[in-house]
Length: 465
Image (cartoon, rainbow, N blue to C red; front, side):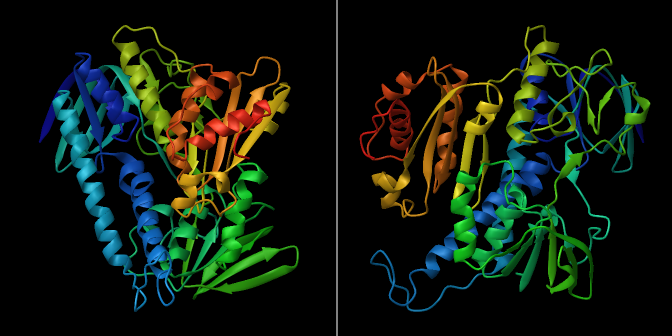
């Protein structure tokens, strides 16, 4: 069966960039078609951000319950240790994913976006063929938005399959590994490694460089490193994994070769743009290395062909893709827009969490700014202490220009700090100065008071520290 469709906007990819672009285009009255070969929501919703955070929450809840066995804690005592069933947690996680994916479908329908299931293959810059469910659909569009996302990177000696897992397959394991080897100490590896340790698995992290979480400075990483030491996560730096066979991971380091016994290997050495299999070679598009080159409006070198999200470069974050998708839809509808955020916030859901937006002190100095830096310990924040979050070494830190006190960056590490990122990025985006933050009355008792105190500390007069 074959069909032909002509539309104003064709979006390829139903992830957080693609579906937002399609919804906004539909809201603006543009005839829009979205093509997605998988479940709506993309990697973030189906096998990334949302499912990983669900399992991280489940693991944390189990670890919290275990503290109440025996002598107990907080006046709560359990007579017997709790048990963890990974299959049950995965089932609960899948229910969340299905619910949210269904919500995306409902939003697309409300915006009058036509959704076609199948794999798109471009014939040229304005038309593609979609094959799926025994049907072939020919689509011709005035505007094309490429939102194909990214895929996990494989290591040459550790192809995915069997006991060698990607971050996606690790989120659907039916049973808990006895000993999980995590290759890569970036944010994905550390998030999942810590979660599996909380579940009860033995965890060893293999990192080719000399540090974990390279996107964050050492002060932010220290509390996470401390937690790993306290909970017996073995992190081997300057070590490479080169192969896996019969339950043994082959390692290379300056000390020579060795093996590690483990029943599962999780490879988290990064992601790469998904540029294969959908006809990029048929488009006359300039590339920027492995990524599609775009300008500040996300327009490619082909007229009326746009690209957004992971496929156009770092940072590979869902909220960046969504913001770009919304912008492109509005440009197509005739609005004047460009993608020039003052900061893109990021969170690492480790134990404890790391969150931030803007420049770190070192980054600001490297950019030529003379800076003022102040921090406030969460150990002095009442709300943090009442939620058992003030004893992990956490803090909130503000970086500002020394001359005019403009906020350049805000970072934090500690329990629950991910929920502060909205305030962090809002301050930077709106051009706040230290005196603005110092003049805001924060609710007591809340963790957000630490943001206020950090601004006061930068000015030299924190009240509670």
